[in-house]
Image (cartoon, rainbow, N blue to C red):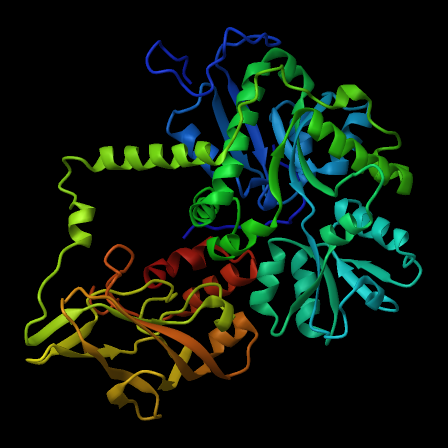
Length: 569
């Protein structure tokens, strides 16, 4: 398993010449006049983990596949936007993402080697108030309280500070900063009824770690409720480019923006795939958390005059609140890049559907003639359920929202972590009348949880261990017509969480959660159990350390993670 760092959520980002057949999507049009050369070039992009990069998976994938006119070198530069800004100034990066006010600060710093221009808005407001205190329902309820936050000197400080000022609360709320989101998360866990201001995706992380956590205040909504005369919106992150590079390779910057627009649109309409890309390209730590957060990080790709109006209005508010927030003066018009007329492609739902269709076509072409089974044929296979005993796939799982764990734990899996359904793990018996019972082993490791009682299923038999914990159940699923019939039922499960799961979730030992039982339907997504593969299912110390590192975003050694890779599957 690759070593990763969790992102600090407001910080910096950013071929081959085509022959006449086929035309690459970003190939320059003769109808548009660009600054500099229109020859294909290399573009070095500095990225930071977190919201600015979470919607970029599609465009990185397209670049890897050779489907871009220019060659984009994407590099995740850790969690510190200042390092990205430094490498932009030395020319190592051509494009980066950064907090909205930082772009203005760089523009105003005349001591820098490289001048910069802003080319897009990447994220609008993504800040939320979190607490376990039921009495916090509005901004007024924060009077006399301390709010912990990250982002000193950045959008969190100035956005929330301005909001407090406008609502007359500046002298009534203590705003206390911490250097990392994990320090804030620890305070939420350790201090009863503490209050935090955090951006997504850390809101979703906090929900996993802090029981009974509530999100009573959406800072973006509060900002919009001010109904500012300028119409300025809260802008969190932007994309900036070296001015010299823009003047030499404007076409490459325009292609980048068009790719980014498509990538953001695709990510918002294909959240699960976008979340997996955050794992593949290491733009976020945990794809399950990313999937929950993507709809709420307000990712966008706003360019041109609309970008100028929104960002300029926001920077003016920051300037009036504290001139140092934008580097001492408002940026001039030459800070805002406006692409040539007609160069920006319109992105619609049809565009993202076409992207998906193209990806599907490529996948089908790659498997043609390789001996891969026909998926449609596999889905429609139907074997009459004659009397007898058969090996089938049966799973029982909890939703991660109920379990407090960063996955949907399957109690039918002996693999660590138990995030995937298993196949060919159960025994189904069909009588002469077509009535079926299924014996389902319960294999989840005790360090994660022990299952004590299952209610809501027609259980006709069960097996327990010496402590009375369930080790298998036999469920009457009624009459079935085909062996491949999918049967889904809901149930309630009483359990005790193991030490490892309690550490990760923050939940108490004794729990009762709703769960789903399903027979069949896992051929495409399931895996064999560790026992079926002849592998050990033991959770060793290295696996435990790696699991904690994944859940909490700590930087444990790669050696510990690698040594646990076998047990983690």
